[in-house]
Image 1: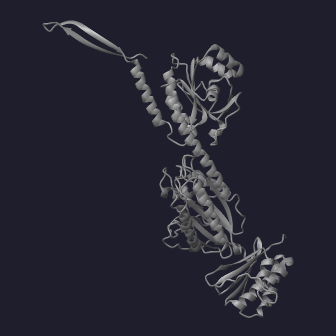
Image 2: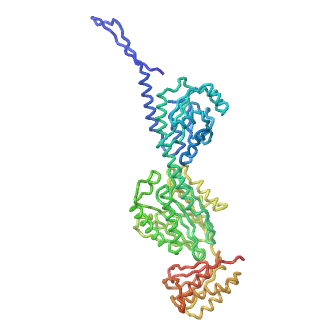
Image 3: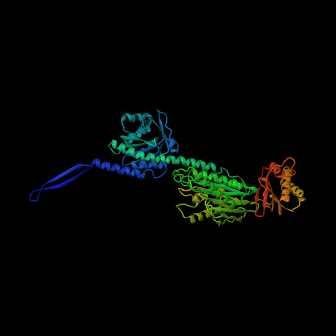
Length: 604
């Protein structure tokens, strides 16, 4: 459009009367157009790149350009770029594969679009998109009849669209950032009669250059997110081990793509004596660093669980480990994290954790938490309660001690362990979310997996800003017929009776072929307890997925496996036990220690 400025002034005679009128007119079209372009460029710098999402960034470029610059805009990227990978240029000649990621039209519904966002198409080498990518420069073209005829031979639907809407002028601008070509933006006019000018091409290049940098940032972030997510999923348990102690179900949901993958994890760990440990934790921050820290902590928890530490002691050792990891990171080479990994700094690693141990024989559960949300307990009568556990400090602070709480759970109770992403969100109050969680968990469900999905359906935010880990465990009790216990006097003569009664119990369970091995194990462990420990001495056999032998005494001194020399008269007992059994170990108790050994149960 043309723009003029006019000044009208009267000419007065000697007596002050108007003798004439002067009209001065100036063509200000160029100045107006320049101001409009500067305004559009400023708007593009503000609106483009508001997020680290590739599709949204491309759409923001199209939204800014229509209708201020063009009537129809498309943004196509190389397929690898859209997936977060490195751009892979095609062969020098031939078709170019591009994925449509955004389009915008002056008409509602974008009727000119031949491709929908997400679709991949091959662009012929004569197309503006392929030509500008090959030349690596912006190109301005008039749509001529010969060009439309070539499209009719190659892609009839495109030729039909060009004729239908009367496209007459196009600009194809490559998206280039940091020396790399990412894709192409195509600007077209059909409603506006004037063709694109050189100044329009320069403006399109400026806008596209801004968008290209933002798309490349989003691509790098997408690559980082995919890497972190793959690492996270590889470090989480793929399947939960079956257990006679609990029936379990779990679910993990990563954060929204705009927030990055966090460091949430869960685990179910088999322990000695048919017990099971339930773990849920959360590393502060997002990105690869948080996922890597999560993997190290999960491995540490499994290692400490094998030592059969009480929950509060395990968290104390885990707290020390995090402090050591933080010191190592701080003393390293350092460096600046990217925006997506900056949640975990070089100086400090923080985490929360909830650790619970359930014993199906006594039906008692010991729990301790380090700054983690408390679990929900649903009893068989349907009462859902948020357990009042001492909070404890988050891991990595190294300040206050942790405290274990022990509860007796009715058989069939449900424990729900979760991370804070499930209840903390901008969309709802935390107390209301907890009430919703308790109400949902108390509802009947066909399975624990179905209950997991019901909880997520009720509480999962539309755009979660944090990872969510949910672990449900329904407790079971071990039948008394599968547990045998004997209180033994501090007398070496009792060893033969203990061996005989153990063999009789295995025969009653149908494992006569394992009776001799169990007799040897019982004899060695009971003899060691009588010789080297203090009363009370108790023998317990458990028929679980394995045959478990436990000998408890009143001494806190743990035995050590050693190799006896050729002429030693003792020192071979534990070595013999280790060779005859699948595994063995010792754990501390409130009154002393327990030495246990497991034999594989033959199939009945």
